[in-house]
Length: 239
Image (cartoon, rainbow, N blue to C red; front, top):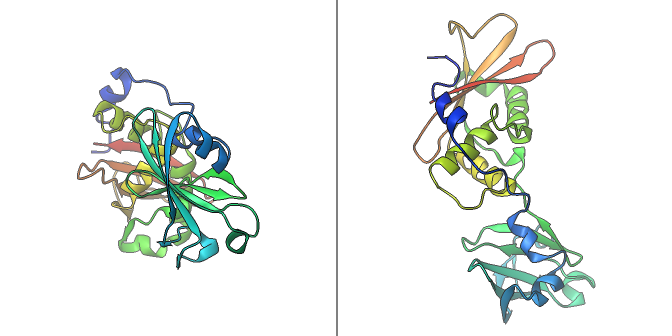
């Protein structure tokens, strides 16, 4: 059950493309003005729009401060931006956000500059089972390890990337998109503390089993935490 990578053939024989060096938000330019004036987009303004703001400055309240603009890229991808144009709303420099075709916020506008909206380990809200509920500090360490580790062969990020590509589940293999998909899957997943499992547990380390829910396909990922140093290590994935 706990042999290293049951499906190792997938990892060792699959031919896959390298990570895209760019991200979806690289299309927009550095500022909202770059986006509005870009020759790569057809942009149509819908004027002031009553909307529930998706930036903390407005604390999620409805406001008429934002101008809504629809953008269609030359590739056919659609986006929507919301940005301010009046000093009474922003103090002199545009603020707002950009959404993708699924109405998900993918970037924020601050002082007119566009910043990608990447997920962080704090966005992971998995289901915690059993005695793992008493291990909040260690669970946070595992979240941070999962989110920060990008090794293609020995990380959940790498496993997610290869799986998405092998099954042709997304055309966007940018790091930003893979991270967002991984966090979405983690929020459908559960984690628990293992006890007395032959071949894994010992007096030195704690071992956790993550049931990684990839839209119903659930491989098991295993992590250890050194009881003395607090170091997190990825062990293996069984699928």
